[in-house]
Image (tube, rainbow, N blue to C red; front, side, top):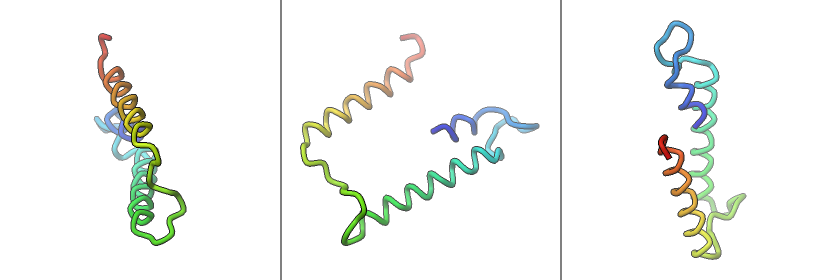
Length: 77
């Protein structure tokens, strides 16, 4: 998310910062993390468990995340 934020800001002589080394490194790291998660979901013995034992706990966390995203997107709140 930080790389995307800096990617839309001016960098050097460009109107956007997509050529910034910081942004490119952040996007590469994100790609590697996504690839790792995809590979882990298809292995017989993953490093990390992907299931949540309590659905109510998962739903509460999802609701909290969505509420925080909504508050962050509301600039006049």
